Image (cartoon, rainbow, N blue to C red; front, top):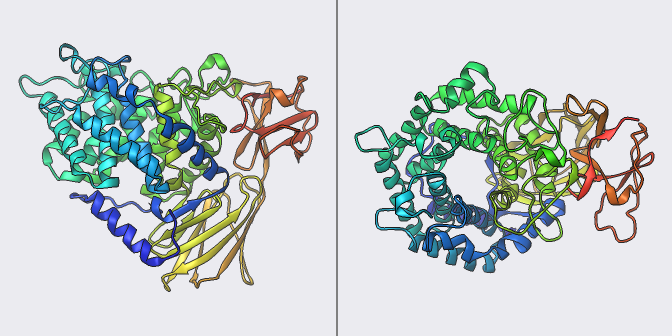
Length: 574
């Protein structure tokens, strides 16, 4: 994991470059570069949840079920093949961070078995020959590519790249507009959006190989959306700016397509691709995002500001939460704009962690705000997706722009960039005091970038006798010649907000403290209680309670939504 030796950083960056071996460089460079997994250490709440993800989930996947459909098709689910690719993606990220030998042995074994199941023509699906390219078959190959390409980038295993090439070649031969080729839109559900989301890893395959036929195939996918029976993803977003009015409003598949569009924009520089994606992102954030940082009810976008959140409403499909994070993360890396980082924090501290059972790593498919969480260790799309999201946390927390290192999520730990090494000491999000220390520096002047949360009413950063005030919702820049031993003391008010229930809960309110949405846990509130507009005070946990954050507000006992199991977020006003 983390090392105090600057030579280690250079070695890690060299190894990372040799493993990824990108042939094609993006025409649009990213403004934010996350700290490498290998050069950081995370403690606190996020570090603990990542440990649970490894020990409780990843190391206990059912390998035989992940691989059975490939070895002896058909699989038990139409989409059974997606799980092994999702596992490999999460496992690669987690191994790069932990270097856990148990995980490395496991993921090597699973990757080798998956590659061995590939047919001579490149097919790596779970369907019998007569049903190839129906239902979720292209979708399965999408996740094959995502998992195998990350495995190649992580380990340098050229067999994984060759298997990916064979998949790409097969897809490019099978789908297109030439005589004898199939229509990719007709090859899957949800107006073709599921199959066409293979766009994302096909762009990556083009980067890894430089083969123009893969880029041509990416353009074929984008153009296929505009055919008479196509989803018209970009055209509708350009015309209406509404994801609710696009195709059948299926959230997971649509945002997966948009993630691919961002990647295609970066590699081509075609600005017409980015504008509808940004419009879609703002439409979700402004009109369809739950206060916990997820979207969708019954797996679809709903009409403006309609956000039902009970058990019956099937809130925030885990796959949707993770794909929203992936889209937001890409837009932040591309732009460096604080509004995207703000939503990363909201989603991570609330919905992402809220879908994970902190005791055993089990995962919820849906995660209600009023109701009971139902985490499971089984195999379904969300149980496979959420560990991918949790494995991303080190990439979401800190990194650097060309100006200098950046701190986004304020988790306790240490990280390195090419500017040097920083350590962060804090109990955030329990408290708003953060100490950032410069441990190593390259000796050059740079501007440290600190995210000032939009929710805070007071933010100061003090170094020596200099005291700076940060504006909520922006990045505070501290430009100076840094030296080892310099320390920045950050103080931010963990402001309490009372949030109106809107269209769906007009007679209720929710409470947010700092970045965390709070919930009235049923087991801590045996008698129904109304919101009395009382001041929020930290309380001692009751005997036997495992959580670390307990708050009282009049007759209510509130805990972070991420810790709750059976709860109410929307609380009656009177």
